Image (cartoon, rainbow, N blue to C red):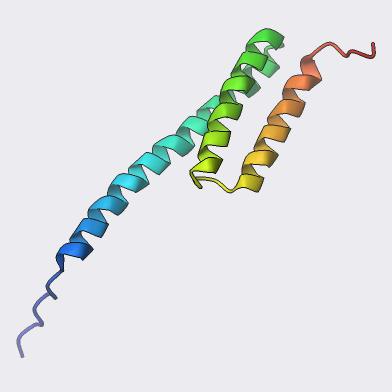
Amino acid sequence: MPAKAAPKKSKSVLKRARQTKELTLKNRAAKNTLKTLSKNVEKEVSGKNAEAAQAALKKVISEIDKAARKNLIHRNTASRNISRLTRLVNSILPSAAA
């Protein structure tokens, strides 16, 4: 009994596969960028460098918001990440009450 021939793929299926591959690479790169920027903030905080930490925080907040607008990450996840990083940076800033 001969083996079944592979089903023919339509043009739309092939195009969708190409698009998916490209989008997957873009999304992976964007998520890796978010992780790297978050780690930069944490590194500056652990080094007690307040000015650099604030600058890094500003940059990562911008990127997180952009990712949320593009539905790369959920808006609540974006908000949670921003909140955690902001609290982390504020923990090394001199307190206004002191």
